Image (tube, rainbow, N blue to C red):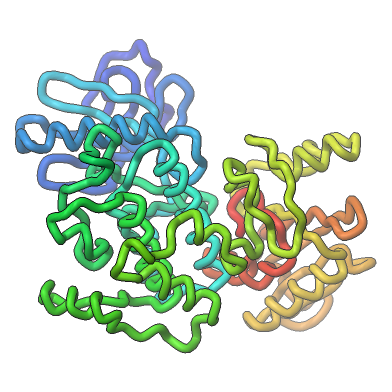
Length: 430
């Protein structure tokens, strides 16, 4: 985008202004008949992504896929882990699909950079994926192309399911089943290629198994350039789960990668597994109030509310002034243990990463830094805590101005290290 402020809506159109509504920015991606650009709304300066489809280049068979993608996304607006569609515009030669901007890029790129992920981080992405797909199925949509390239991350590190071009809607069912073979071979359920009817939700469950394997192992369970050979491996369950993956996670992978869809673990059954429920973020699964957080009783979740809202209501205190900051170098969390325990965890993570931990008064703050002691140390990160009730802590992780740059990977290491005590994060946590 240009360096100056965007022109007002009344300004004359330029090559960077789309239909007087959006100022186009840099190119994010390009296909054979479409491209995706970053853009900004001229009305409220909201950043968005715009998929620009050239109708003259698109094959006639692509039109129903485009319409299906738009229809599916409109059905699924109310889930936090599904990419939102803002509006659709068209001219004689172009179709413009305006969607939520996921600034974190593809999950595929993250895996390519870092390889396998820590189990708690992999579980977080898996929880968000499964929750989103359950919502899809409840609204009659089967995705049918679940793969890391179609799973995006927003600026806070939350997963967003995208690309519904191959999705199936209820009107495509014949005798309650789908019949079109589609998807990406390495992630597609075997029954989809058999030219017989299949259950779209069970096919998505298979893809979830492949995704979980990739997140925890860093590579595909079945990967062969010869598709016949690959499907023979699938039928024989010929793959090796790394020993580094925990037994509960390995069991889920095994049950999802069942070549028989009739005995394959369903999305609903996955959500009942103790491994899945551990350290679960109830806000992200607020549409599934029957999910029980590990070692906690059932609770009602108020849609659209988070831990900070609930605490403010129940305590009679307005805490918004303490926890409403827009600085992207800050993260906030709630923990279900004493502040002292959180401080210990922060110190352990910091030392493991090569930082020295320095405790504040009463154990309510921890600074991580490099160098010597006292004035000779450069503190780059602080964690401050407020114990608002017994066993309930509000915390804030903050970059210190002037400190060295804190890479995103270290954010994730800190989140992972706190995974057993943190209930939920604000602005990008686990």
